Amino acid sequence: MSNTYNILWIDDEHDDPDLIPFIVQAETQGIILEGYKSFKEGFNVLDANLNKFDIILLDALFYEDETSETPNPAGLGSAIQKINELRSRKTFPFFVLSGQTHFTDVTNPILEAFKIICYNKKNPEDVKQLLINIKNAADNQIITQIKHENQTLLNAIKDYPNEARDTFITILKNLKEGNFQFDDQLYFTQLRIILEHLFRKANSIGLLHDICVQKGNNQVNLTESRLFLAGLDTNHLNVCCSITHFPKLIAENVKNIILTTGAASHTSNVDITQNIDYQNYRTDVKSPYLLYSLAFQLMDVLIWFEGYSKANNDVAKNKSYWISINRDQYGNKIETETITKIAYNGWGTVEINKGTKSISIHKDAISNNNLSVGDQIMFTVKDSSSVQNITKI
Image 1 (cartoon, one colour):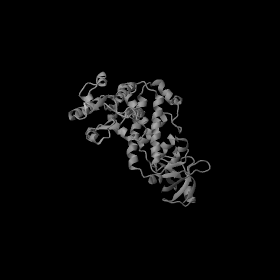
Image 2 (tube, helix red, strand yellow):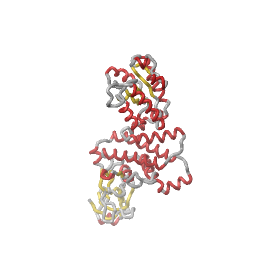
Image 3 (cartoon, rainbow, N blue to C red):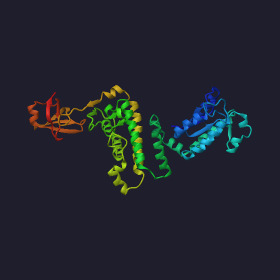
Image 4 (cartoon, rainbow, N blue to C red):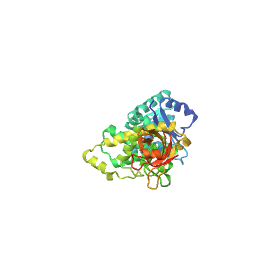
C-alpha cells in the first residue's frame, strides 16, 4: 500500500480547469489536494480536523473570507499567523505556490519576512521540486509517520468519527515518543466509545440485534452486544444469534477490553477508578502497557470488523439469524434441540450452546416420553447437568 499525503490547499483558483494537470501530477505521487478558496473556509476545516492534514499549501493571493471581493496578500498573512498559533497543537510545514510574477520573480515583503520560497506554478521544474519537498517535509512529521505505519487501521476506521482516529494517533504518538504519562481513565473511555461505534455499525447492517443498541436513550449495552456477536445468550435481553460472528480470538479481545476498562454496564460513562481489579493492578504495576495492549487489541478488532462487515452486509439475511430466548416462569431458558444419542443403559444425550455442551436425559424421561434419537424436544436445564420439563415436538 503506497503512502498518501493529505494537503490543505488554499487557492482561490483551486477548481480552475487549468490546474487539473497539477492536481493529477500530485495524485500520481500520492499527494491529495483538498482545495478551498479562502483563508477562513480552509482553516475552519483544518481547525476541526488537524490530524487529517499533513502539509499546508498556500497560494500567494487568495480570499481572506467569503466576503472578500478580490484575492489579496492579507489572506496569506492570516494563514501564516494561524499556522504559528497552531504549533501548540500540531506543527504544519507549509509551502507557497503562485503564478503571480510579483511573488515569483521579485522579493515580496511577506515571504521575505518569513524566509519563505515561492514556487512558480508555471515552471514545471518548480512544481516537480515542490512535490518532492512536500513529501519530504511530511515524512519528517511524526503524525504522518504514524498514519503511514498504520494505514490498514486508519482505512478500517475512515467512516468512524474523527475522534477515533485521533485517539489512536495520540496513543501511538506517545508510544513512539516514549511518553508514559497517560490518563488511563480518559483513554479507556475513548476505547469504549470506539467499541460502541463498532457495535452501532454492526447493528446498522443487522449483525447486532436492535435491542442491544438502545437508540431511544443513545446507549449501547457493551456486554450484551459482545455476547450476541459471539453467538452466546445475552444475560438480560433474552436474545441470541443462531450463528457466531466473532471468531474466538476477536471475542476474547472484545471481552477483555470491556471487562478491563470497567464497562460491564450499558454505557461508556464508567469511572475506572471504581474498578477494584484495576486499582489493585495499579498498586503493583505503574506503566502504560495495559493501555497499549488494549489499544492494539481493539485495532485488530476494528480491522477484522471492516472486512467482515463488507462480506456480510445483507441486512435481511443477518436479521434472519436473530433468535428470541423463551424462559419459563422461573427464568430458566426453554431449549429446543434434537436428541443425539441414547446409550445402552437407556440414558439420552442432547447438545446445547451450539453443540458445545452435552446434557443428559434421564432414562425414565426417555421411556415415559417414548423418545428416540433424532426426536426434537423442548426442555429446560435446571441444574446444568440434566434435562427437565420435556415436551416432545
